View (cartoon, rainbow, N blue to C red):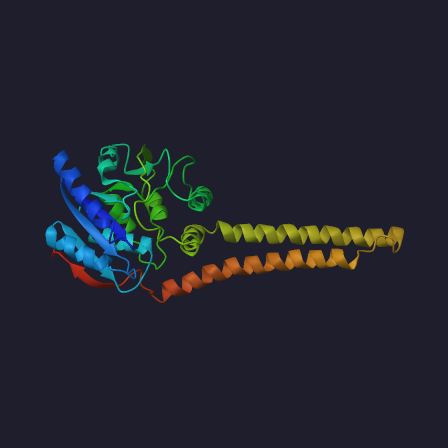
Length: 314
């Protein structure tokens, strides 16, 4: 059987050689599988691509592709999944925080009752704001795509071939890989895995990129936000109607005593105006993504290839 290790790469020229060599040592020591490593350079402003080319020259099992621009981690992962030929596909990070020596904990967890094994970290070595963002994304995934409560969706995971084949059927420009995976199967589980502190550099995930990932989950897999906006509109419309009836009754019974002041009126107008703008924003986000999908905006564009064979998927 063949293992495919898919690694999106961004600003990792210093850490990537160690990750690839650890994969080689781990799979060779286990002895049960052949392997390939797919490195996807997401066009960072450094020499990561040269490092990938050097690793490809050292080992024919290492393949590399370079994007024409920065498309984001999930688009890079989709490119890697389409190139992977393995019976089991392992996705991991390029910074060494998800150690390859732990990969067989995930691989061996795949059985007749498990199609995807996600790593879960007893102690995460991320910054506090990253952990908070992960919790927000986790809550959103539970609400929108039916993620089981308690299931942690990590970027370090192992999946069976049919799951990857289902994931890559998505052709839109906003892939959310975890959502696509949960569409494919409900047989998922968490496996405890060590999480190492970052040895060099800093995370390529800015706050803006994390918000972009959250929006992919928020708008890409459910119409619940639109329903929420509709229910909120109906609720406040009903509330306004009740208040109007109350004001008329108060006026008839008490005269001018119950008249509403300017400040209260402005507060109501600001609240209602803000809600209307938020609902229009949600609707606009859906329409914008629909437009970009219909205009065939690319998921990614591959500029260069290294060590790719004819049998690799396009």
